[in-house]
Image (cartoon, rainbow, N blue to C red; front, side, top):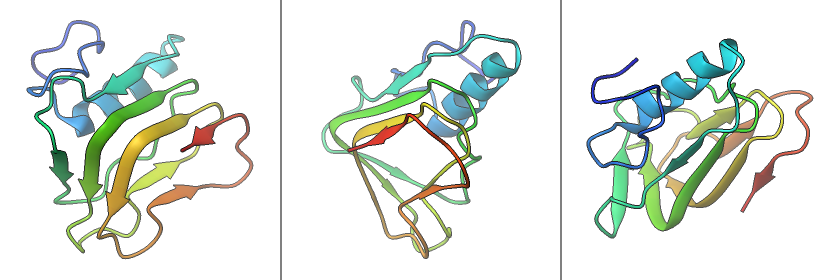
Length: 117
């Protein structure tokens, strides 16, 4: 668990890093809790996350990342893929992913039921 969290459900505050929110959602999924939403509602517009290294793959079934149309993730030309999806029923919306050396969003293998838009 990252600091400033209460069960991993505080992903909407600007003090809560995206990397931590992804990790907490994945840890909760291992414990049987799914359906998390990571959103950027308290992030000043435009909301930009600049990655210094690759994010962990998105493995929590039912995870939603909602950028609220104003958020972006920049790979800073340091990472291969912006978001890497390895589980079913993951949704990404309202989020721009740019400046990566590979795919903005990479979907691994045989995942089903997710949306990107």
